[in-house]
Image 1 (cartoon, rainbow, N blue to C red):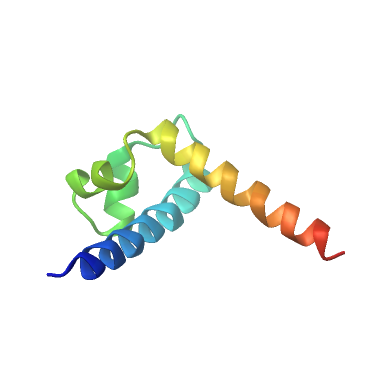
Image 2: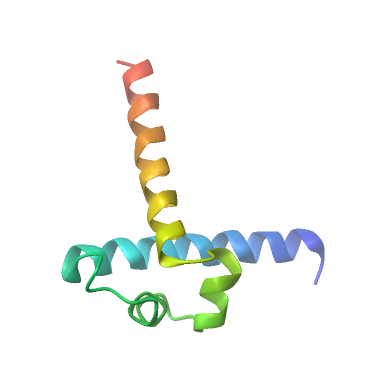
Length: 78
């Protein structure tokens, strides 16, 4: 697989993890959600989770950064 293919697969996996995490956090809360819950909901192996995020905390920070970026973009276009 080419580097581009690996990067694209990594981005797809990251997005699947982020979507699954949001759903799990909304259902169980942050502290009640495990990485196993997230990977199960995303349909990936736990090792794949740790290829894209070093920890559940890092995933949460990524979600917060994404939310803040959207708010800044929306504010700039208001």
